[in-house]
Structure formats: C-alpha cells, structure tokens
Amino acid sequence: MTISDQPQACDVAIIGGGAAGTLAAIGVLRAATAALRVVIVEPQLPLGRGVAYATRHPEHLLNVPAGKMSGFPDRPDDFLDYLTEQRAFPQLQRDALARTFVPRLHYAGYLRRRLQQAVDASPAQLDVRAGRVVALERHADGVVLQLDSGQPLLAGRVALCSGNALRPLPARGAGAVPAGKRVEAWDFDAVRGIPTNADVAIVGSGLSMADSVVSLAAAGHKGHVHVLSRHALLPLPHAAGPAADYDPQPLLAMPLRQRLRMLRRHAAEAALRGIPWQNVMERIRPLGQALWQSLTPDDQRRFLRHVVRYWDVHRHRIAVPVHAQLMELRRQGRLHLHRGRLETVVAEGACVHLVALDPRRCPFQLDVQCVINATGVEMRAQAMRNPLLQQLLGSGIARPGPHGIGVDSSADGSLLDAEGVADARIRVVGSLRIGTLWESLAIPELRVQADDVAHRFV
Image (cartoon, rainbow, N blue to C red; front, side, top):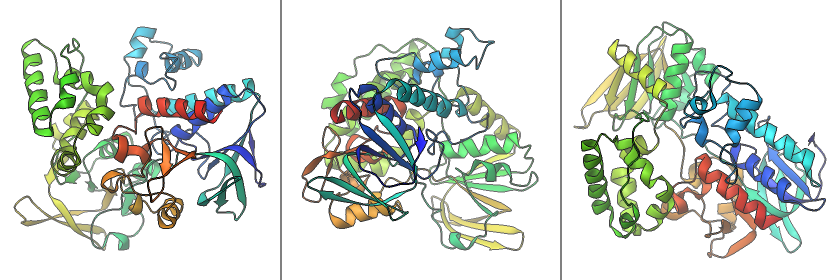
C-alpha cells in the first residue's frame, strides 16, 4: 500500500477506512481479476480502526466472543485463525479462545493484516489517501469526489462507508464547558487522563458508558461515577447455556406488540428449561433486518419511540467480565445510576453542574469535576455534522433514510436520490443503512455488505 497525495482517476473509491471500508477494500482486491485501481479515502489513519476499534487499551473488550468475529462470510473461523497465527493468546486452547471476549485492539490489526495479504495477492493496486471527502458529483463518465485538500478524484464506482458519528451532549451550555471538564467517551486517552480523585458524570448508559467506566477503573480512578440517562438501563451481559429451539419465523407476520408478547413468552418458557433469555434473543439474531423491514411504518415509529432502548440493552450485550466490573462498582457504592433527562451543563470553578429532570419532571442536580459524553451513535444523517452527507442531502443526490435515519438505499445498497432513483455506481455500506435495515452496525452485517459490494463492483 502507498500513501498517495496526488490526484488520480480510479476504478473504485472507498469513502471511509474503518471496519466497513477496510472489509470492502479486501473484498474488491480479492475479487479483482485485472489491474484495477482502488483508492481508500480516510482522515484518521491507520486503517481498520474507525470508532469501534480505535482503542489501544486492553480493557476494552469485544462485545462478541472471538469465534463469531470473522470478517468474511465464507471463512467463519478467520479471526480465530489470525489470533492463532499471531500467538496472541498462547495459554488458551482454540475452543476456549473462540468463547473469549478478547481486547478490541486486536481487531484493527486483524483487518490491516488481511488487507495487506489481499494487496499482495491481487492484480489490483490499492492507494490510501489521508483526507476527507467533502462533496460528490455525478457525471456521465464517473463520480467526482472533492477532497478537503481541494483535489478531485474521478471514480468509476464508489462505496460510501463513512461510519458512525457521535451525538453531541444534549444540554444547554454543554458547548461552553472547557476541554478537560467535558470529554467524549470515544476519546479513550482523555477518559483515562481524568484525575483519579475526580467525581465524574457520564451522560448515557449504553456501550460507550461501559467503555468509559472500565477506562477509569484501569487508570486507577477512585472517585464516584454518576451515570445519567433517560431510562437508566445498563447494558446486559451475554450468557452461556443451551440454545433456544423455538421457531422465530412466525414473528415476521406479527405486529410489534404481538411480537414483544411472544418474545416474553418464549423467554419465560426457556427459563423453565434452564435456557437464559439471552439465547432466546440469539435465535432471532439472523432475522434482525427482516424483523425491522416487516414492521409497518407506524410500528417502526412505535419501536423507535417506546421500545428501542429496551431492545438495545437486550440485543447489544456486553462481555461478561465488563458487566461484572460494573456490578462490582455498584456494590462498592462508587457507581451511581440516575434516571433523568439532562437539561443544562454549567462549568463553575472546579465543578461542573448538571441539572436534569426526573421522570416526574422534578429537577435534580449532580455536581462533579468532569462530564463524559457517552450518548452514543447519531442516527440522523442531517445531524451528523459530516460535510459530505450535508452536501449529498442538500443537492438531492441522497435523501434521508426511513424516519430520518441514515441515508436511503435500495435493497442492493445503491444510493437513492431525492426522487427515489438508485445510482448503482454508489453503494452504501454499514451504519448509514440503519434506517432501511436497522441491523447494519455489527461485523455480521458489515462482512455481508462488503462482500456484496465487492462482487458487484468487480
């Protein structure tokens, strides 16, 4: 691979070099039978990290056991093979390693290693351009990408893999809180740098919160940690046990309320047989996209309004050791959970004052030395503060996805414009398809989408 600063035409341009973009590049390189030119445009090198795998700290574990994390649908044990090749866990037998929640830092290395191997074996050429795409125009002879350097890139086909964006802290005054007193959960080094005796408020109680708590603990933090969210629901752990054996297909024909009642019934019946509810959820994992798409638009809105947070904690579970650490900190009286809607954040002297409304709309205040924004992934494309997405939506080259989530795409991932017309030269991969597919963030979905794009482009 070469780091290229010169403009050039290419056969395939990949916008974004996180997990989705790296997997798409590997797929194109492996499928190529001729000397194609492939360019990845990514502002934050090295490749393969994105938001999910940018951490360098061993306390951040994968939320899925290693045996389920292959990047390729036709090679289900590939991540295990990589860990074995690297002798990353020589003390573990392969079957034990498959069940282990390994540090996330291994995954970016895995993706880069497979990318380099694909480059070495491919007749195609890969260039990596350190930069950001800020605009895109469609022409008869290709798609022109405008980079923040001012240099254009003419591509025959484009994979839009721009990844996740962080939600801003949802409170008046948050922007005025100085750096050091306001930290983004995805800035792992900054979280670790919080003074060990500081009391901390974490806004949001999902996966980013769990990352922040284990980062603080790893850095020797001794202060109190206050977790504030609207529902006050902590992530739930995975569980071992027998597989659930019910048939999930009938759920597809049910309206939302009936589905929820049926899932609760399956969980209760499974519990009587010693089967954890987690394995009931695993049974519907392959149907995630079909379950979303088979809901009526009204039921999708009800899901987003009333169900989504409960779905998240049951569906997006965390590693057992991380959950155990959260529970131990609560037992020690150092981790406090508050239910409320954040209203204002004000820095005053050494303190940060947070005012929130509880479920009865009564105000309460938290006084801390630092606030961490762990509100998670922004799903509304128009709020992502991404110049390229703003330009695509403003020019009508793209339109928001269902319910304003992500951007709209056809069944094969082609970008839909404001009139609903698909452009097969531009394919969307990953989180931007969430409004259409719902399940479009995790590796099982990314690897399938990346593989599909590769075979359509080559």
